[in-house]
Length: 342
Picture 1 (cartoon, rainbow, N blue to C red):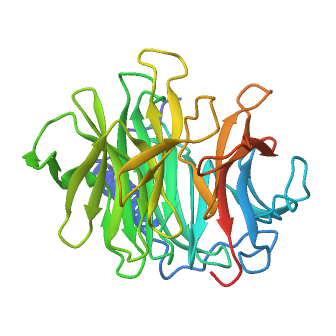
Picture 2 (spheres, rainbow, N blue to C red):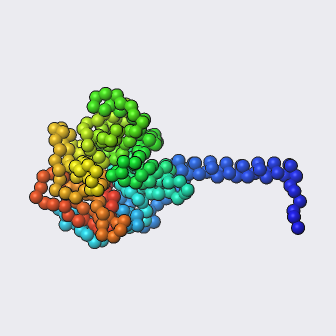
Picture 3 (tube, rainbow, N blue to C red):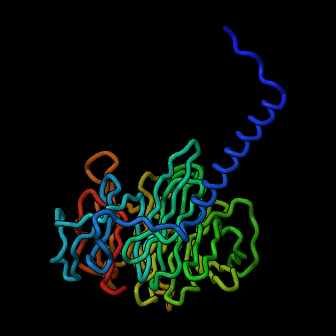
């Protein structure tokens, strides 16, 4: 038996109610995606904090963020070293000073990334949801500034079809830049505009204002120095990607393209910012990663592991050295050195 048709008033009432529900859901999602302020913070289920477990933080194969002991002499951490689970799950993780950042794929029809900014207890302070695939993450030495890079098309820097989107959050003021492509760019001294400009791999100086990044345009890459206050950036040199500023702020580790059109095109170098002289490190394999400084003389980075989709963390001296690369942790990525007290 068929049901009687709804009256016009009933139809209008039902439509109004459904619209209100959809609007409420949309507003609720927008608020949740934009900011966690005012809500009870999420915490790491294992209770591990940055102060309780200083050392080498990293993402394990399934994304579990763990802390392993580390000593500059190299005796404190080795492949298979015992580590502690934070309870976090991240595609990329980085911690410094008063903050940490965890970026991970966000479920949905479109490719999105959830960016979670955490305090030293690994409680969530703020959440931002942005379009793209997780790629890079960095925090300034003080913990005030947080940055991330996402792929929005393609999934490899080796491809000519990739496109990135890089964001910055000032945790003190709440100022959010979802896409740094609005920077006033000066390329080799001249104001530059082009629709194909891409930025990625930000690293911050200790003044929470100056930063370095990669910019790509017309098939070339450049190391740029940016200024948050003036919102300007200038190129420093060509052929430099994924910069990482040393703890003393005098050197930048970066990957340099040494083979065009090759499957493994990059080689890690260190640039002296005072002399602008670059030095290749003892790692001769191609490193497609933003290296991290474990101390003033040691770099850590990820290379593909034995298992499909897995990676291992290796270290190498940051300057000329007879010592070659050393395996630090198996089935790990996103190295980040954390010290007690920030």
